[in-house]
Image (cartoon, rainbow, N blue to C red; front, side, top):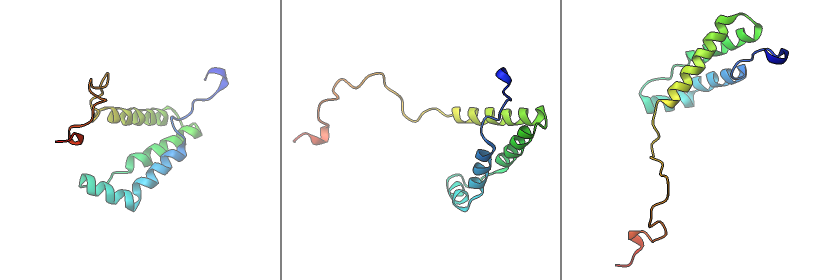
Length: 105
């Protein structure tokens, strides 16, 4: 609260609402079921929206802590997986040569 500014949620509450609505949509449910074999659980988005609204109303530190904990776990879940491609430091030494399939036989 530097400068008299109140603390704000990490995202706007409308973002949590939009994520929840998108999660409950038929298209997302079908895709999630196809990819993962189960329906998506959208309860966390709804709980985050409720905590965000409570935070904005000034309901207390419990809503703030719940929302921050949820955001931290979401970030950690994203960082859990390694990148698919290994990044290289420099291009291959023969990058300017034609590929083997382009060479005449």
